Length: 110
Length: 117
Image 1 (cartoon, each protein chain N blue to C red):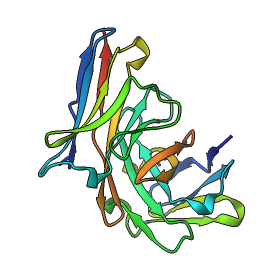
Image 2 (cartoon, one colour):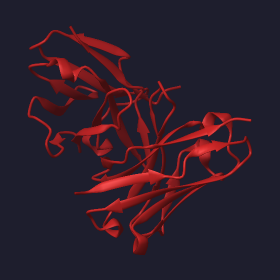
Image 3 (cartoon, chains in turn green, yellow):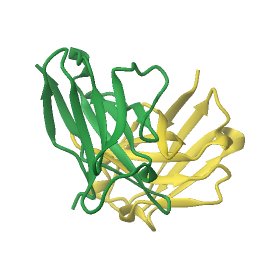
Image 4 (tube, each protein chain N blue to C red):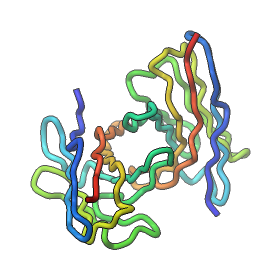
């Protein structure tokens, strides 16, 4: 019963553009959920990419952008590179001091 | 350089207790909410607990309520997670993270907790 939903896997060609999404099992994601996005490679700590819907964390290239698309939060990667191949997680703040991660999307660059 | 360093992980028997620590440096700990996030190896991230800046307010994921206690000592720039009544499904890497704008903006390297007899 995953409250926050992400596609389990996605693929993109090198140089291509991909949009990963983050939804709710019931309802729509809005900025009020303060969606944030994290990149993680095996054996490493997560890296913060985007917070508060569309603010890039320090040092994150502008190839990464966040938005709300329809009923979901979205992470768009433009000009995909080989080292973008990672797991990507979104988090939503549900209020009352509760945060929930999505199940993650495994992105393959090929 | 801003840094978080976790410690205290290890192997514990079911039903046992463990206290994790997270030492903060390069910033003023008291200015930030802090969180613990865990990850079963090969699985996804799970938010576990949060504490506000002065330690007066906490929140937990349902599965650890009544068993885990998050606390902080701002004078020592250290965050803690006291874990009691440990179960096999608590086995995970535990990360401490600094909160900002309802996100997790600085991460430690993680400490492994293994619950097994």
